[in-house]
Length: 362
Ligand SMILES: *Cc1c(COP(=O)(O)O)cnc(C)c1O
Image (cartoon, rainbow, N blue to C red; front, top):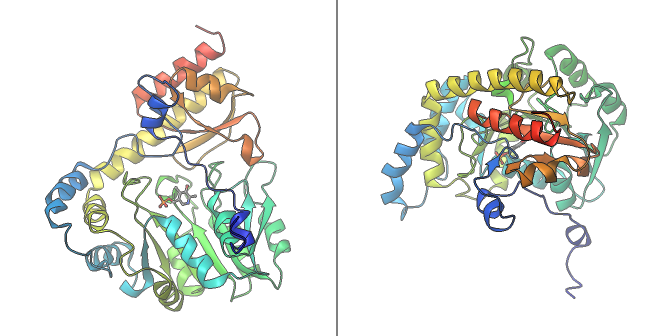
């Protein structure tokens, strides 16, 4: 027994990812699996990114550019922010950890909604800090009034996931602004926008504009979702310059690998792939919501690339037997619910066929 291990690390329950395709085949005997469990881009990566990757493979004996100069310059132009406001990470997961490492110690609190992204409590507990989880409201959106009421002298970081994973619900600019006004200025506001590129509501917050008014803010984005590069691990934060400087100190010098930077740069330039993904997602979302409703399966409005559906107890395992992997939300306090990634039209049809089979309808 390694008695010297920190108790908060020993008590950690590790993040449970969706099963990789290979494990679905080898461990669950699923033939030709359809994975709709991790919100990956069903169209795959941008072909431009794949080409850039192949071209860069012969240079991997070199260390990457630790400052991500090329990607930094491109994003700074695209987002109209200063280069030193950007912090890159091995996925935005790493940025969450950098924020925790920089701001959380035992006795401190990270405030978030629940159910929300599973990494928030994990990174807080990893630092021996507490995670205060404020239940979502009846519509499964953030209860910002309750969150504001839960702020205390111990709150160091407040996380808003917009659109929220796993519910897909989103917040508009006005409600967010009201919460921001209630937030003491030295509490770090972490806006996790992993799915913001999919959002459709016209009043979706302009979080980068908020940065100018509230520099202790980190807007988290990722290349894992709409850009289809989850396997490469690259994400970033846009922050006020002081916050960016702190997170830069906390990171490893070569945290973004060379292939990831190259591919992200190419993916960023492929606006056709981006737009195609966004359009296909909107169409698939409308189709699935309509068809699930026709099957008397409750869904919630979603601004992301997945939807929450009340499939009933045991449905996730039954779907897996039919070759379709979705994410069971029982462990998130949403028993009988699943988070389903929107697929290509063919994938959506296959999901619907499986659901019809499950419900005993032709
Ligand atoms: C997927 C996801 C992330 C991070 O993904 P990375 O692959 O680490 O960039 C962050 N937040 C939410 C809410 C997500 O769903």
